[in-house]
Length: 229
Figure (cartoon, rainbow, N blue to C red):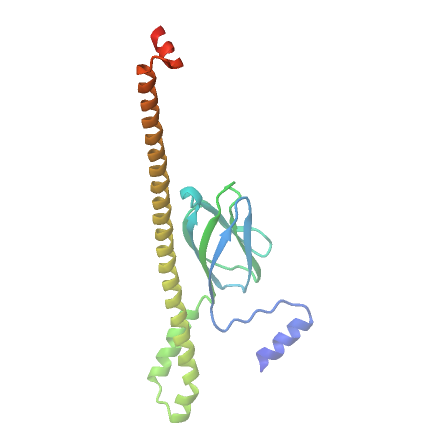
C-alpha cells in the first residue's frame, strides 16, 4: 500500500516512476531495409541489468553485417558494434529513463537484413533474491494455508524458467533459419550458374556448327572471307 501511494505521489509531482516486479524479456525478428536504421525504446530503472543478444539471420548475397548502438536516456552511446553478424552484451543502467537501441543498415545499399534479437531487463539482485526466497521457503514449515498462498509464487518462478527456455529455443531456431537461408542461397547460386554454363555450351556448339558449315560452303559469304586467310 505504501508503494502504491508513493507511486501516485511521484506521478502527480512529475517524477519518473518505474516498478518492475518481474524481469522483462522479449525476442523479436525484424527486417532492416537497406540504407535505414531500425530503433527501439525501452524504459529501464537505475541499477537494472540490460542484456542484449542479436544475430543477423540472412542478408542478400551473403552480406550479414550490421551495426548496433545502445544509448542512455541522454542519448550517450553506451555500446556500439560496427559491422558484425552477431554479438551479445550486458551492462548495468546508471540512470532511469528510456534507453534506445538501434540496428543500422545504412552500410548496405541494396541488401535487406533479417535480424533476430532478444532484450532482457532485470534487477541486479533478482536471481540471488529468487534463490534466497526459494531456500527460505524450502526450510520453512508451512501449513495448508501458507502453501496455498505460496502457490502463485511457484507458478511465477515456473513462468520465468519457461520464458528462459523459450528464449533458448528461439535462439536455436534463429541458428537453424540462418543455416537454411544459407543453404537455399547456395542452391539458387548453383542452379543459376549451371543454367548460365548450359546456355554457354549451347551457344558455343551452335557457333562451331555454323563456322564449320561456312568453311565447306563454297557459295557462302563467309567462305570468301576464309579464303583470304
